[in-house]
Length: 191
Image 1: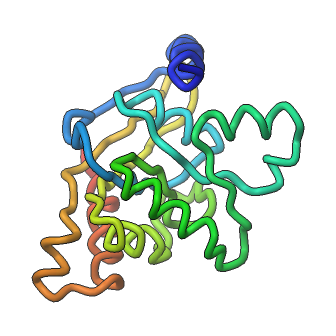
Image 2: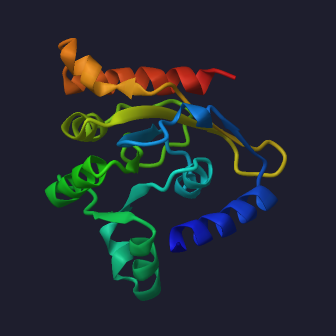
């Protein structure tokens, strides 16, 4: 209930303030575990992704935010998962796999931090690890443009990657991560 209420408010705000174009939202599986893997150009990206899809999603937030009284309460009610940045946070990894095994959707920025260069950095393997362990499909996603009224921002969802099929073909996590990177790069250079 709270998630949908906040999503509606944020969606109205974003569409009033920014020119937003969404491409490929129909490519997101309507049910089952899904990992949305996107490049990360701004702190405005997580809400943009959330308002661009029909399903509820979970996402990571740095653990310090949960210690801020009102904000911590709010983001925990909005499906945020605390993560200790700069460390191998096994608890966050375990929780994310549980969330996916329950058939939910999880947003991940596999570059690990914001990157405004326009060129995708090397990706961390966490997304492929979580997807393989949970049986989730991965939806490569590209955010491009500017958060302004004139130029606008475009979010493009790619075709889902079936990690189970790739594992059956003998692919490992590193190769799956490279596939994610290639797919996001292709979306970044497409229309």
